[in-house]
Length: 128
Image 1 (cartoon, rainbow, N blue to C red):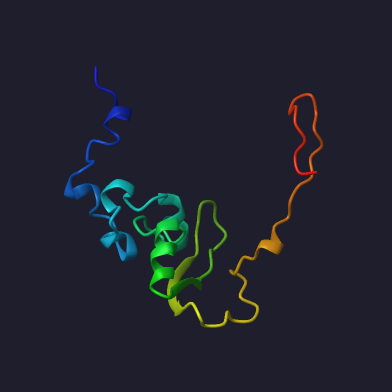
Image 2 (spheres, rainbow, N blue to C red):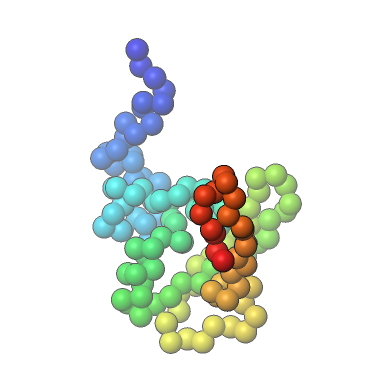
C-alpha cells in the first residue's frame, strides 16, 4: 500500500528537487542535500522558497569572502494571517559599519532570558 507521506522525498537527486533554488542556494555545494533549507524562513522574507538567508554555511562562506548580508525591508506585511513582508538582501563588506538604528541587527545583549526555577517536573535548575 502506497502512502502519500512516503512520496515526500521521491524527487531527491533529480533536477526537479533543486529547480526551485535561487540566489546563494542555487549554486551551493550542498544544494542537492539541503534544497534551500527551511522553506518557511525563505517564504517569510521573500515570498518564495529556495534561498534561506539564515543558513549557517552561507554565513561562513560569505565571511571568508569578506562579505556580510543584511536583510532590507522592501514591503511590510499587510497584517493578514500568514502574510509576510518582502525583503531584499544587501551585500556589504564585513568592514562596513552597521547603520545606526538598524532594527534588524540582533545583538547578544538583546536576548531576554527567562528565569525558571527548578521544579519536580524539570528536575534540574534552568538559568540561575
